[in-house]
Length: 305
Image 1 (cartoon, rainbow, N blue to C red):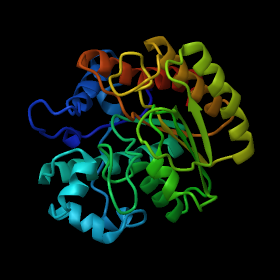
Image 2: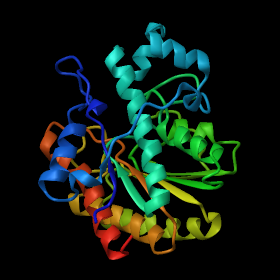
Image 3: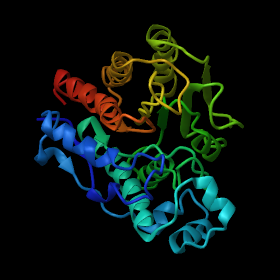
Image 4: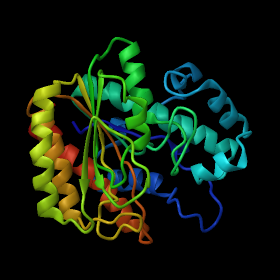
């Protein structure tokens, strides 16, 4: 049996020609995972739209309604970086539903992966950097409210700091935020996570993996989370056009293996989202995202979850 994967066809919605956000990658990732035998159709789970009340556990109701209806002011819309459409509203919400479902599946199976998610730049009252609603924060709140978990560790290894997530949980000891990111990259103004590890420009595989190993095992021992939410952004890759680090494909795969093995070996369930990734070579980008699911498949089988 393969690791549970979450996908919905509505993860993809049209954007204007030439838009720099690689929307097609979500469908292509799903197709690649099936074509390469990383998963099978019976292990692909389909999310549903979350009720608005779940979004309101994190986001201001006025902001949610303004986004739903396309009435955000032009400055707020530009900050998001994606043009409004009813289709994109649906896509945004179904992706949140996907991360919630992934988290629930991880609690049941020990490990699960979304094929989208990681909208960590969304704040309670505004969106930013292609992020509209913060799926990791909403999933955390939903699971806590339902009594499924008490303590959560968010491991954010996207090349950009998870500033929205950090701000949301700044005064909340029940969710520990760990962000390991490039220092000289978006966002220009960083928030304060529970643990921020800033990396120098151009860091390569060996140093990156060594740095990660210095923090993650101790965090798990200290926090003892009921669930780990893992943002596996691939924008630390050397060929990413919005990243400033220098990881290779092998480095990304080893990073994901390291995170998953460290958590699963100690009995901590992990729910994974794919995070950021931006490149002209779309097929290369999709393959990099698939490394998370390949690593998860290896760990899932190794531990017979």
